[in-house]
Structure formats: C-alpha cells, structure tokens
Length: 614
Ligand code: X8Z
Ligand code: ZN
Image (cartoon, rainbow, N blue to C red; front, top):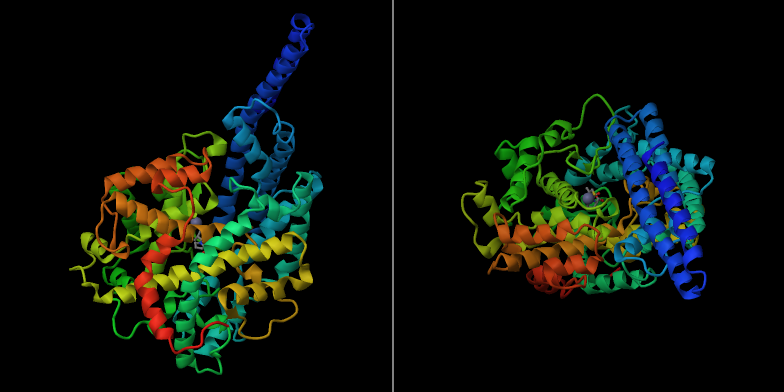
C-alpha cells in the first residue's frame, strides 16, 4: 500500500472511532454532539491536507523530472513520457481539489489547514475534467504545443533554417526593415498549427475549472492573490494607471526617433509603432534600439555587453558572477549538483527549450537552471533572474509542500530582477569590470536603457493575460483569437502588426508562455514589485544616493531582510510578505516612478512639441 492509501485508511479508522465514541457518551447532549462531529471533520481535514501534500509532492517531483528531460531533449518519446507524468499529476490535483471543497466551509479549522485547503481547491494552473480520457488528451496537447515551440524553425526559401535564437539576433541587431520583417514573420510561421490545439486545451481546462466550482479558468487564475478575485483586475488597472503616463512619454519619444530612422511612412507619427522595429521578437522590451533613441546630449558611459566580451566572460563565469552577488548578501553557495546538472549552453546536436528557466527538482537541494546563454548584458541579467528563483526555492524549502511557493506569483519573478537593479557603475567597479565610477552626466542614458527594458515591458506584461482571460471566459472564440491579440497589443502597448495577418495566424502561440501555459500577469507585477524591493533594500543598506545609483552588493543587512521575506514562502498572504521587506502591504508603483523621475522630466521636454498617443 502506498503512503497515501495508508494515511487515508488511518484517517477513515480515526473517523469511525471518533464518530462511534460520542454516541455512547453524549447521546443526551446535542450541542456537544454537534461540536464533536465538527471536531471529527476538522481532524479529517487536517489529515486530508497532510496526505494531499505528500501525494502531490511525490507526483510533482516525478513530473518535474520528466519535464526536465523533455526540455533538454525534445523527442517524440520524451514528449510522451512527460505527458503521461503530467497527466497523473493533474489527475491527482483535480481529485484532491474536488475533495478539498468538502472541507473549506468547515468551522473551527486552524489557519494553516484553511489556507491550504483553499490552495488545493484553486491553485491548479491547468485543471482538467475528471474524465481520465480528457485528462490524458489535455496532457498530450500541452506536451505537443511545448514541442512545437521548442522545435520551431523558420526555413528560408534558400533552404536555410533558423531557430528562435538566430531570429532574435536579427530582431536585435538589424536596422533593415525588410530583414526585420522577414524574421518577424518567419517566427510566426511556427504557431498556426497550435491554434486548434490551443482551442481544445481551453475547452478542456474550462471544463475542469467549472467542475471545480469556478466560472472559468481565468476566474480560477485570478483567485490566487489573497483577495476577492473580482477585485484583482481593478488592482491591476490601478497599478497600470500609475505608470501609464511614463509609458506614454517613452512611447512618444521612441516613435519619433523611429520615424526619423525609418521614415514616417513606415512609422506614422500619430499611430501605433510597427512591432518589428523595436529590437525584440515580441516588442516586449526595447533595449536593443537604445542607439536609435538615446539622449544625444549624453552617453550611457559604458556598454555592459562590450565589457563582458572584452573581459572574456564565458557562460559559466557569468553564472558564477551572479552566484557571487547572492553570496555577498549572505546566501549560501549553490550546491555542486547545480553546476553538474544545469544547462548553460545551447547544445549543437539536439532540440532543447532555450527559453530560460529555473528548476527545483527535489524541493531540497537539486537546483538547476536551463538557458542557452550568450555573452551579453541581456543574458547576464536573465541569469540573475533565474538565480533569484533558485535562491527563493531554497529559502522556503523547509516549509510544507503547499507553502513552498511565491508569496504571490509576481514575487518569484521579481527577486533576481531586484538584484539586477544593483548592477550599477559602483558595482561594476567593485567587481573590477570598470576602472572608475563615471560621474552622473551619463545617468540619463543609463535610465533610458533601463526604461527601454522595464517600462516598455509593462503593457506587454499586462496584455497577455487580458487576452487569455477573454479567451477563457468565451468572450472570443478561435476565429477571433488573433484579432483580439492585436486589439490588445494596440490598446496597451500602442504597437501594431507590421502587415496584415493571414486568416490562420495564431500570433499568441509564438510567445513561449502561451503554448507553455504560464500565467503572465506575474511579470507585470514583478516589474512593479522589483522597484519596491530595490527601494526598500537600499533604505535598509542606508544608501544615500539616487536610487538608480544604489547597489546592495555586499550588504548583509539587506540580504537578511530579503531572506526573511523569501523564507516565508506562501505561508502568509502576500501583503504580509511585502510588509516584512518594505513596511507596506500595498503593491505600489511610486518606487518605479521615483526611479525614473529624471528621465520622465527629460522625456516631457523632448515631447513638448510632439503629438503623442496612438
Ligand atoms: O519568461 C521569463 C523568464 C523565465 S520565468 C526568462 N520572463 C518573461 C519573458 O521572457 O517573456 C522574464 C521577463 C518576462
Ligand atoms: Zn522567471
């Protein structure tokens, strides 16, 4: 008998005993009778949660191992193995979620049991209907779509085939609009075959969500934020409203400069920006077009990519440098197995999922990252991002299964980025990559680079799930998927498709997180939170300078306070975790606005005579 069945049997026996005993002793006292029955219910709930945690931990770990093998070696076989393991894990999650609903309204539950029951009921990212055939179908669809993305290639007429990384390089470096358009269109040839699969996945997941008592999958996703799920969209609107003026100012300046570069026929000065000109495959961050939009009166002072290359950094040294940052804050070094088992470089001989990720295979010490690292500033920061996941995972590893997670999903995405905000000139001098700290005359350039990465991202971070929520709630069916995608791209980002999209286009599928079914609002939240974390840590470190110049490198007090929040995992509602670090219980964009205030002043001057908006 497996451990779970044993536990269930013991729980049942316990219940039988508990239910039998009172009959003899309290038959004349109905009130006591009732409270004993409730107590039996409470005891059953506690034992149910413990059993569920154990079962999910075991199945989850197994599924994680098969996912690791699949992501490192995409073949027909690994796809099937991962699908099978995923199917078993989902089936268990769904079964447990349905059972958990029986206990959630029980009175007298202790805090942790009540919190965990709620997590069990609502915390499934991709629920399936209870019907085993449908669970299997859904797992296969998931593995297939991941495979399509990971193996995706665009083959030119001359027969040369390009993988995503190569196409991304063109998007980053080329200034030839035809070449950019070809790469942009080329990558989007991988996703039309996903459309029918995606539509079916939505159908199945919604059916699963409804069976568990939710209106649809979007409602289920929105119920993971320690607040009424109907209030969550308003919370996002509030945060977006805080940062939108800054985004609009950046958009206005960037559009004007792109029009100067490419002509106002290609970049109309009163409309959205064509999506292929922003230096990134998804126009989600724009730092690669810095040379086109840079303030003329200042230089950024240094180019981190050039510094890394000139100093002969290789991928391992980049990761070691990231680890050293965490060590300087007092975090223990990564285990030897991290170095043995991670994937740092794109293998030449097989298909892998290159999209960067961090893994916690056994939820103890088997931490890994998987990335196809290039030696440049962007990947250097992504390494910190991924390591942030690993250090968070390690900080909460001693908590029980359901508490091993992010305070809310934005926190996990924000930790490593927070450290990246400390990659300042002072830090680069400390690690001997710069000779001297440049004076502040170049700060406008540095802020512009940072804004092209962080501010440009915000509306993209928001719109991906605005799209999914409407798809999940049925407002739009498969025929309208692509149009809705571009409506939202235009509404939030002020970005447009560079040419008319064909009827079979499924452009959302060309973004990793859609076929990969990773919720995306987390990244919007992370971009707000990381500036809150950074500001708080700089205050703890008693840094006196402007917050964009502050580095917490080497500051143990900052490390301790960060760790105190990370150690809480999901054990408390996220406002308490936020308070532990920042003193505030509210997500708040004033930190990001303060950080970029000098740039905003400059942008407003630049835009004074321009017509902004789209
Ligand atoms: O997917 C990621 C990380 C892994 S969690 C590399 N990010 C989003 C993306 O690439 O679209 C980080 C920023 C946004
Ligand atoms: Zn991440």
